[in-house]
Image (cartoon, rainbow, N blue to C red):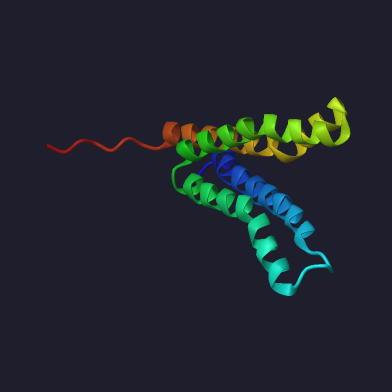
Length: 133
């Protein structure tokens, strides 16, 4: 495999894993000394649901890059207005809300684009099989 194809094969996967880990860190706010251990554990698992879904989408993208790329682009663009509005209500700052979007949702758009690029690079470089009659 050429180095450029290999780079575009692994780059979206690595970025996606790092982005999922980053999103998972936000589940730590489920822990509170006022809650029992089981309440904290259930709240933690509930907060990890987005990470679990992103892992499922990564598995899909790992197998079918084109479909996974479209999924990640839709996720990134679809959640951007929701994340923006939520943060804008909290801090009344457009700039801060845009920074949050660039940090949380845009990596998934970039991952989606990279998966699609990887798909087309591999499709272009793979030798065509002869048709036997």
